[in-house]
Length: 66
Length: 282
Image (cartoon, rainbow over all chains, first blue to last red; front, side):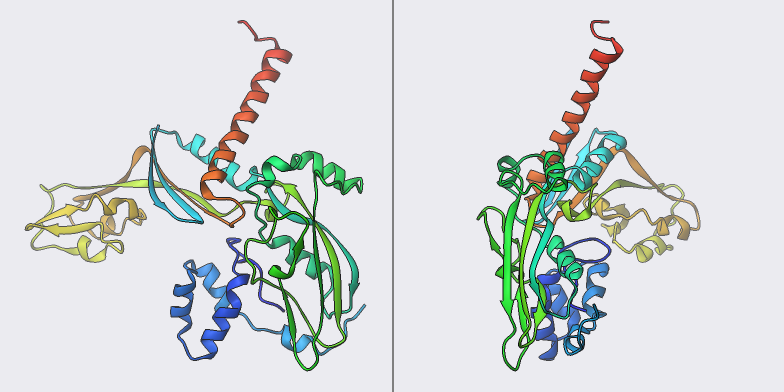
C-alpha cells in the first residue's frame, strides 16, 4: 500500500520524507546516505524505507471490493 | 534537583537529570507519552470516495498526521469534554477543527493528495508536515471529505501522543582498579569498548568522563578483563531523559505540559484525601 505515515515501531513521522527518498534512490544514490541526510537515524525507521514496496501503484488499477 | 541540557534541537531534547529518584522521572516520562494533549483527527465524514482505498484506510492515515497544537491547547476545550461531545455527535467549534480535503484524478497519470492539501478551518491547527501522502487517485476517481480534529491524550490513542520516543537511562560509572590492572601488557577493555569510554592517556589507562554518558552499560569491558580490574555500575539518582517530538508541540512545551498534568493529578489526590478521608488538619 502507500508509504506509512509513521514508523510502526517508534511512531516518528516519516511519510513526508518518502518522495524525496525514492526520487534520490532512483537517481542512483546510496539509500544509507539519503537516509542519513533526511535525518532518519533509528533502524526501526530506516527499515520502513528500505523494505517498502509501493503496491499502491498496482492496486490503483483494480476495482474496490465493497 | 539539577538539570543539564545535553542536546537540544527542533524536535528532540536530551537532559541529564541529577538528584531525582527513578520513579519520579519515570512518571514524568509516562506523562510525556500518555497525558499531554495534542490535536489529531478523530472523525472523518466522506462525501465522496471513488478511489480504490477504503474509507477506514484513509481515515487512519489522516489521524496519524501530526497537527500543530501549540496554540490549540489554550483555545480548545479539554480532551475529556470533547470526547464526550464527539460521542454525542456534537461537533462544536470550541472542541473540533474541521479539515477539508478534496481532489480528483488527472488524465493519464497518478494524482497524489498530500497533507498540505488539507484545508484547515483554523490556521493554528494545520499539518506539521506538508508532504505526507494521503491517497492516490486515477482519472475519474474523486475524493471529498471532512475531517474533524480534537484534543486528546496518548492513553486514549497513540495518535494523540506528542512524542515518538521517550526514554530514560542510567549514567554509567566505570572504575578501573589500577592495582589489579596490568595495563601496558593487556589492552583488551580499550579494544572491546564499542563507545570508546576507556582510553589511553599519557601512558596510562583512563575512563573518559565526557564519554561516560554514552556508555550503554554493556559490560563488555568487565567480562573481557582477565584480572577483574574493571567494574561497571551506575551513578545514584542520575539519569538521562531523552524524548523526541512528533512536531505538534516543541519539546520544551511537552515537558512543561507533562509536569502540569502530574501536578494536577497530585493536587486532585491531595484534595480528595483532605475532603474525603478526613486527614485535613491532622
